[in-house]
Structure formats: C-alpha cells, structure tokens
Image 1 (cartoon, rainbow, N blue to C red):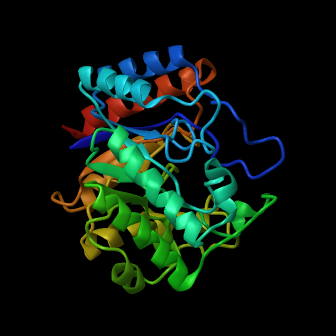
Image 2 (image 1 turned 90 degrees about the vertical axis):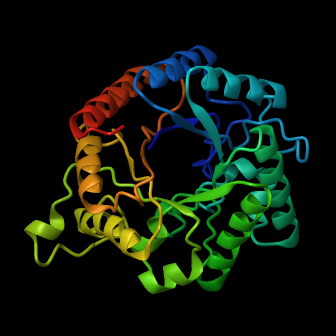
Image 3 (image 1 turned 60 degrees about the vertical axis):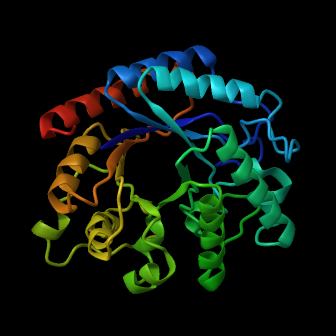
Length: 318
C-alpha cells in the first residue's frame, strides 16, 4: 500500500494577492533533510513533491524561482529518498486557484500557448523524475470562494474544465505516467457527469481534514451548506460520502488527511476508509500538513508523522 506525504518545494500556489508570490523558494535544506529521514522512519514509502516553480525548467526558464533546483540536484534528492526506501513523484497543480507558479502563463489559461507550456513542463518534469510512474496534476478548489481574495480570479466551467483536465491527463500518459487528481470536483457535480469525463485510470485523492466521519450514520438529513466555504460543517457529510461514491464508480483512491485543522483527523480518516472503500480500490493513504518545508514548521510535521505512525499501527496498515 502507498503510504504517502505531500511535501512542498515551491509555495507559489496560493499567491495571486499582493506580496504573496516570491521569486525564491520558501524552503530550507536542513529541514528537508531532517524531514525525509523522519518520514522514512515513520514508515512512509512515497513522497509527492509539490514542485511548482522550484525546478530549473530548461523548456521555460522564465517560470523558475531564482534558487530553483537544477535537474541534477532534483535527481540527487530523488536518489537520497530512494536510499531511505521512499519513491518521489512530482506534483504540478494546474488548478486556476493554485497556478501562480506558472507566472505569466497562469493568466493565459486555456490558450494555445498555455497548452504548449503545460505540455513542455509535464514532459520535462517526468523526465527529470526519471520516468516517474505517477504524476499529480492538482485541480482542486477552482471555485469562487477560494479565489475571493485574489487580484486575478478565473474559473473554468462546463466542458472547458473537463477538456483541460483530460488534456493534462493525456500529456501525463504520453510521457509514461499515471495521472492523479484531487477529487473535490465531485463534491459539486453529478457522479454520472464525473464518471463520464474522468477516466478510471486517474487516481483519486479525495481529501477530508476534520474530526468526524459518522454524518451519514447519525443524521438522516445532514445540515445543508450555508456557504461556499468547504470547511463549513454542512459540507463535511458530502465530502465523506465522496469516498463511497468514488468506490461505487470504480476509481482507485488514495484518501488524504491532515493535521492542518485537528490532531484527530488522520485516525478517523484511516478508520473510515478501511471500512468503506473496497480493498482492491484503496491504493494508499496520504498525509498533507500544508506547511512550508522550514524549521519553523518541523514541530507540526513531527506531530503529523506521529499521527501517521499511530493510526497505521492501530489499524494494521501495511
């Protein structure tokens, strides 16, 4: 089973606001070295690295941060993790809510030049990651609420959203990898529409970050959302039910939890998913604290890994 963490190299994914985007990495090498060692010691076998503009792209150097990793440096770090017993796979988030890392191209969404740039970046990244068999394309939170504070907000809808999703997936496949995506599109669309537009080979990362999953069992009529804010309790039931819906639709899943909001989340997530997702469709589990890879946040990372160890041991995750 995949036992994964999401670690950030770049942080320019929530940045379309004054003073938020940087030309340098919010990343500290000592924290990275310490973190990957602790991940390995905690039984993690897979690292998804949020690359963004943290790689020196030869195809589009205008995107990269000033201190972005060279191809050689990235390969060295992948080898370091492999020596610790972990595989490293790339993530480039193409959601319009999280694509500031694309610099000027983030404001050319769905144009011929944009497609060519994305095509180049996907191919180059997979090559640098030595033909990585998995590639995360993001695609979460492309909605009004999550862009309400942005200086530049753009949202694809209808056929365009599905078209672009499948463009990224096709490019990933062309380069020999399997596409992964966050699953929150399914929270707000009909399951039949989702199934008709998302091929079954796309691994689903549905994410749930709260501390209870018993909504369906305890409430015949769960509270309806009163806001577009997905942290509102009215959405929690819908998000939990998405695990069941994805299972019925036949997708492979790697549910994602976090200690971002509560220390109780990961254990309840693991327990629920082991009980409600078919064994042959539960491909793994993921932890995502959503903090920078710096010494400042190492205590939070240590708490996250402790929760992973405890939950995996308690529920017999191997």
